[in-house]
Image (cartoon, rainbow, N blue to C red; front, side, top):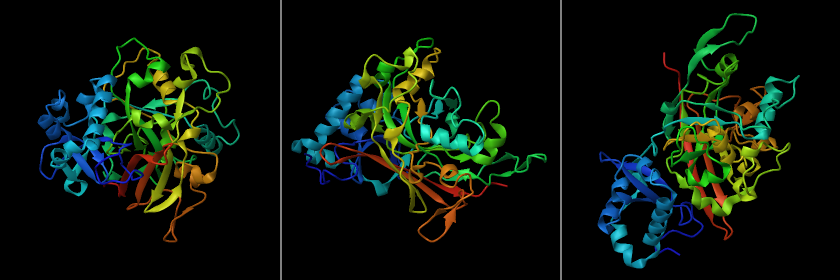
Length: 405
């Protein structure tokens, strides 16, 4: 129990305690922890408490904290919990709590590299049926390895950042020359992102069983996609300009340890995967019971369920490094679109509208094939706990702005 006035079942209660970076209006960035609708200035609190890692909380990103490794991450989390459960700390802590309405949220991580995977069997199958109706829905390699592409770290933005409609080459008429202009098939992708805290040496693969030693936390992620630009460019080397204009992440990073009660077994992988993707024990191939929602202009259009994902985050990390590629503090890798089997659990408009041939209905009576200028997309998520409370994954939101001339 906490002395802080927040119900046990409230969003951002004691079970969540995510880390973020914010600044008071006109002030310097600082690392903070969210509880309820308040944020604790960790640097100021740590200095007063003479905490040994007070310096890392004064940084402008979570990278210095993440670099210290999982033992320190757990020690810091225990210390933060104690601040909200030890009544003798009430007066000191209250002095360093800030109402969220008084701060600007900043990108929490200096992103080193960004990799996006394709880990939902339903999503991959739907895309295959849309674009390759006369061929098998899944490519032949899909169940043997976690397919992914290397994205653009420099265009990862924090929730609330506007997204400018991209322009590029498109080929609306295959019998004619391509044209240039704003994307007419701008899409959202409901994804879950994993933030790497600890690096690894070049040339040394990271085993499946070592994933928890490297993954610091979890964010919601929207990998905005210009489907028409993507369709023209992606053969033979995959996504490029249709993806690299913006990727939005939530402002609060939830520590991986917060999801210990949300870990679930993976769906059965058939055929059996190669040895480096198997792990030494079943509990190394964990999935997560995350309940997600997609809203456009406040209208919920989908409720993807992350627990159905085919590939584990630990397998994604192992495959990403099996060739000897190194990890760096601040690396971000994402699940790819989260889609279930039912139409109301699809995580992209590409699937929800079957490439624009149908329209999703909004509460105002309108509908969408793809995103229009002015649309606000919000992804939210949470994980249930055995006691009935929730770990809040938070939200990531972005407004579409018209293409620049």
